[in-house]
Image 1 (cartoon, helix red, strand yellow):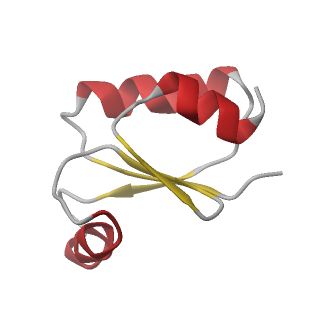
Image 2 (image 1 turned 60 degrees about the vertical axis):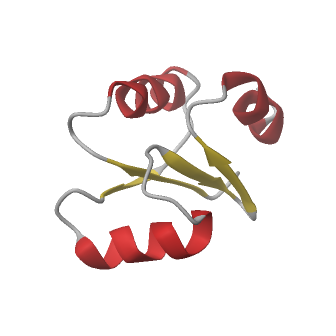
Length: 77
């Protein structure tokens, strides 16, 4: 079981694709809406160094954007 967190916004197309991918693969994830949660936005920028979404954390690894091959490898799916 992996610890998966996604920092996203409601209008982000790739955020929706990432969340659908996790659901299809039965991956449990925590979703933070950084459009409305300023504390989580700050946390995301501190971790990733940028404002772009999605930022996906899988265990101790950080993936910026929906990079399906990297995400699949990290999750073992």
